[in-house]
Image 1 (cartoon, rainbow, N blue to C red):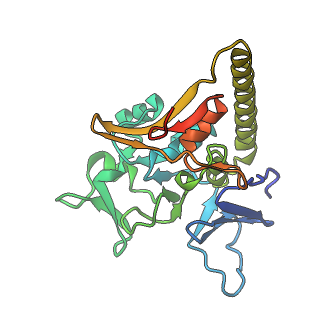
Image 2: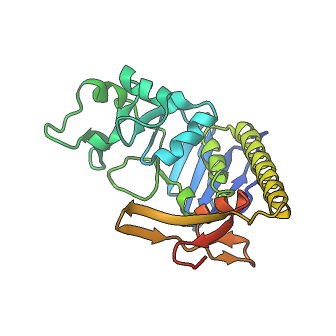
Length: 269
């Protein structure tokens, strides 16, 4: 039933495949989701197994509460499934066009009424009107959210890519979302290409820096800070854990991959 599968390499979730369904587990949120192939009956689950959501796949109508999830949906070619977004415009021109055409709506203006099992406007009058009424008249297949919220809608699935400590692990969450579309083959190809490009760019940077140092230059330094204003500058913790192979902050990981000598703003030199 699922000829294409993903192998998860280290992120905070897991996936198992069965004959007619998949089980996704968000390890950080400690939640399980059962993804059932459309047309197949909901499986009988073991005693004690608690599924936060049972979703028919492939999904066709989704909403997200964080734009970090939209890139994976677009990358696997499923932009047209984006029914709800957390704002009016995004960095994606094509999603913005969907807004303009009335195919995608701003979910920050609505909330889910669990008693009535339907969306309503957040402001009075509560009844959905115009584009919202037409777009949200059909139930959503799934709502991807960064945290559990009673007003986000159902069925709700939590994504946790922002909690990964390595940029190399963040794309793994593309596999998490792709599983809802049965697009494992597509995301596998993208992530393989991403890792190849990362390693290639990092190796080229290391060679360039080594050549410059050999010629008498000093190794360039990378400064990792959070700049909010001229008086609010916070240095990132750029400590490196040799055992886990992780930096305390993902920004420092990028600087290191670029061949820079990573340092904090409050360190001398």
